[in-house]
Image (cartoon, rainbow, N blue to C red; front, side, top):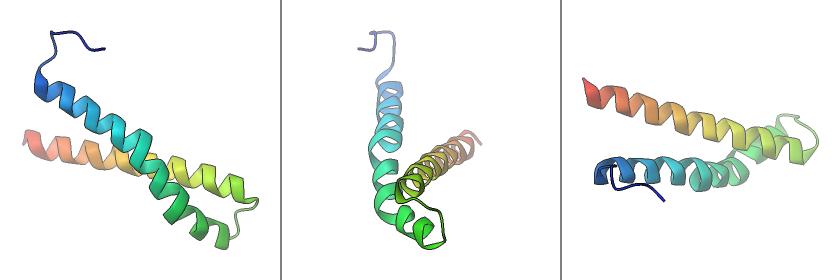
Length: 73
């Protein structure tokens, strides 16, 4: 998948980013945020689910960027 030129730390970072965006964020979006968005009045429910998953992914990416910037300082 990834060439041997990548360091182990970089491969681990790519894997963690992939898992957080592809697995964890959709679960949080579907089960935690979408019911709240639906109650707030976003209709139909599939639209609330899609928007909440996008929101959870954006928040996950923003959190990762904040952690990376703090680690560099």
